[in-house]
Length: 220
Image 1 (cartoon, rainbow, N blue to C red):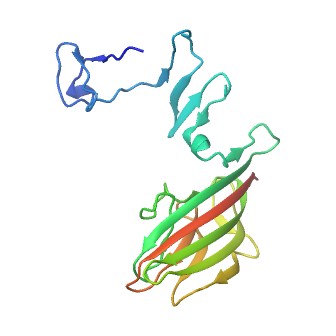
Image 2: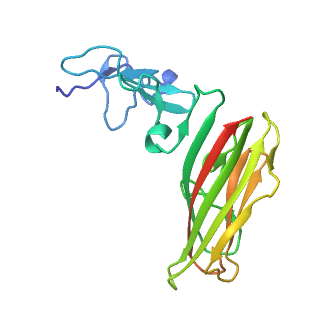
Image 3: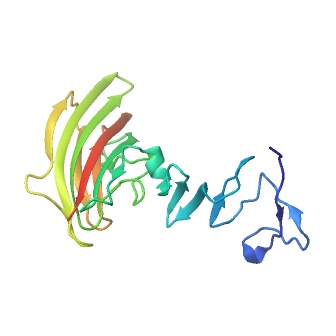
């Protein structure tokens, strides 16, 4: 395999930081390539079978074995399964959420451990009903104590409208080793259409929170 550099024609009008009037080799440590997709070849094949592309906000991958493009989320989280060819849409997704708290201000665990936002919590898709089960662990390094919760519940989002918690609400089925103000709950963000897992820590204490939650979804 030969190692080569692509020749570029860069201009500020196209989003570059330089204005090259003649073709110039790209800088591998500075320049980014922009394209709708990329077909990969090898020493004996030159075709359109292997494709890396973009679909909306997702990166997709396709090859001969997987003729239907798979998103990066499908690959990194193989437990997220869908069945679009069935009579209705079904989906089962496992999420790992975590965050660290140092006070009693309530916050939410997220998929990246960062401050909660619209892109790092659990979306409630339009016209779906969901059932979830969650396991939460809160560890306090300074004392070696651990608290545990198990929760379950169901919710739905009719069309593109309001998200609601179904009759019976959110049930806490197990809570052990709870200390002071430590608490967790699951609620709905109706503005951003999210299922959220809330936690409350202890004053002046570092608490490491991690939640494993499975969401089972069916279309309405």
